[in-house]
Amino acid sequence: MKVSVDTNAYTAFCKNDSVAVDAMQKADSIFLPLMVVAELRSGFSVGRKGAENEAILQRFLNSPRVSIECPDENTTFIYARLFGYLRRNGTPIPINDLWIASLTLQNDATLLTFDQHFEALPQVPRWG
Image (cartoon, rainbow, N blue to C red; front, side, top):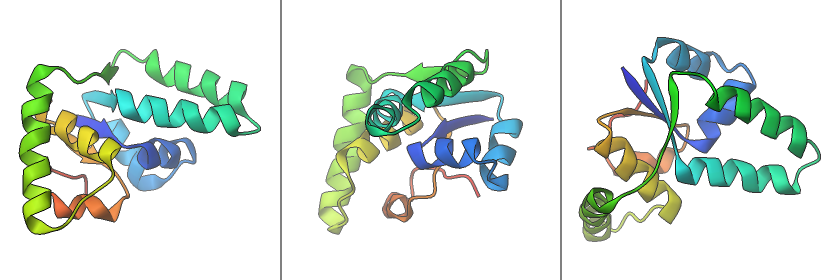
């Protein structure tokens, strides 16, 4: 099983949330979309434990099951399709989350997230 991890799911994992830990343990491959890494590091830059959190993230990224996923031209087609779907349904979601959903579909993964707005994209498989 491939799992794509949203920012809040990574944070939940670091706090030993049972749902996040279970998903990560069961995953054969764990994808961290580039936007998630950027959101995490943005938080680290304004937090009091930036260096500690960066070290934890580096250990996580060093796992052989973990990779950072970056958008490419193919991602833009998925993004456009999802964008159109959301617009037609009047259910926009934050731009970074649209990229995360697109990368999740592109990698044939299941999204681990605690954000309810992903419910607006039933075509994106979600954990749980």
